[in-house]
Image 1 (cartoon, helix red, strand yellow):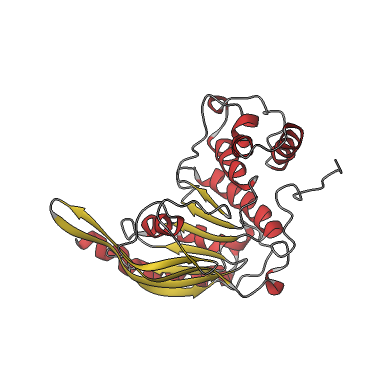
Image 2: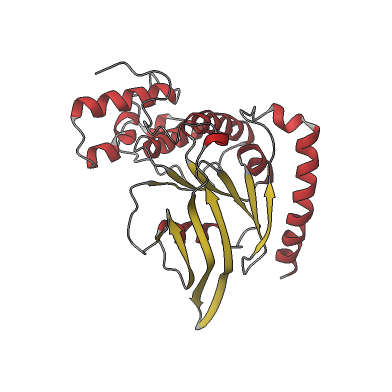
Amino acid sequence: MAPVNDMDMLAHRPAAAQPAAAASVRQRIEVRDITKVFPLHGEDLVAVEKVSFSIREGEFVALLGPSGCGKSTILNMIAGLITITGGAAYLDGRSVAYGKVDPQVGYVFQRDTVFPWRTVRRNIGYGLELSRLAKAEREARVLEVIRQAGLKGFEDAYPLALSGGMRQRVALMRTLIMQPQILLMDEPFGALDTHTKLEMHKFLLEIWEHERQTVLFVTHDLSEALTLSDRIILLSARPGRLKEDFEVPFPRPRDAIRLRESREYSELFAKVWHSLGDEFAKTKAE
């Protein structure tokens, strides 16, 4: 087997590895008038109402809004994890069907979701085991991903012996090793402390700069959205409606820490915060 350098082990998709400016303009994710209604105590609770947006190939988009506005609900409808009440979601032009897993899509949950009874090596390699990849190739890929994640030396450690940031790296790499072209991420760093979160931002940006997956990243943290994304889709308070769509023009590659010290960052933060703050006020008034 030929030697592998840097992050080449994660994916071998020529189009996905192109710079953002050269990426195809095709729409990978499309949401059209998507609506979700949940039954609650004999009544209908409208969680999301007629939200529409699209995400181009190689784009990193943050879905931002106050708690309870339907961010995770939208993500779960796109993933096919819950039914869509109205409207439709499309991946590469194909309508999303409830319960049908798209092999091009990777989903990263709020919690690290690592298996406590599996070592780092066996957690990361879990999906490859299910795919029945040859053992030698599977082990080579897992070891390379462990190196990329900065987990060398912890191959045979169990999650109990790892920090929160390390466990989240294991969960993220378990998804990325399957080479998804579309990443759906549901507040994956929400439970981490500020320092660890910044480290994870740096780690994720390094991976994404190389791979250029199409990403929809749910967050309630404006700083996180500005640090990571190309665009911020802002939802209103419940029922979640599309309020604004902000471009994030900061050049890449980005330094997750230095970016926050720039004047441009402060100006855009204030602009988005003004609109987001109105929605926070509405949730408190309820």
